[in-house]
Image (cartoon, rainbow, N blue to C red; front, side, top):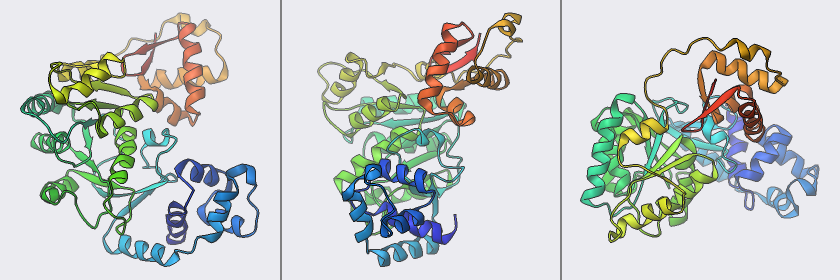
Length: 367
């Protein structure tokens, strides 16, 4: 991305009353952030597109010096900016309606790796929770997933530490800018994560450490991964927010059960009870549900498939699955550049025709 394009995209990120959903709508319509500001100043934006309040906010935006300062900070500190226009923007996050229009990244891993698991939970982790994280990570290690969490006290830091122990890349999603690490005690592990994984933030280096920012970043934790594991949680807490968001994105959610009398198992137990998370008692459960086991060579597709009447969209998906063997809903949508809602509808029709099978972990393969 060139400097001018980034300059205006940063500005759009800070316009009051315009969130990521509206910003994406405008970017799709006008093609660039600079074109949005130009249209607003020329009164070329239709009210029905975004509303009068947003238009006025675009016109009144005058914090250009702060934009310049942030741009300078990015360049001086070798921070990578990943926007929705970039090919390395996480494809799963592309399907999150409120995913950020851009974020900042320091690290060395592919953000579109197929195996990516978010692990979240209480900051008041118990000895039981620590044992679960350690045991799960040991079993997951041979499958080389990227572990995503929030670098907070408790379950988050245990997930990061155990990932690094097994040489697994791990990504921390921050609730603040790169000028600090919060909590401060996690600076050392953050440095290790930059060398084996990375740090991600949508916040500027001048943004304050604020509770709402930590809640906001949870949608990135949930949106980046194919699944979210809740290890321990009280009846309320940020981990449950992340689980709810993951569910809204149609992602798998897993929860580790605990005794009904345990304060920090109540959240997990409630998720399971309300069918908002699958019960897992071992890492093998996750491996099986996400189909991470070694894949066997598939035999050639039955000749019967040649005689099934497929629509153009169904044929596209059929050909893709024939080449790739097994893909998730998100992967099919991104590879075919097909809206995820339409992809889901076409897949359903193909299931009804007994052309494909739906597998655990929202994966699909040809019958």
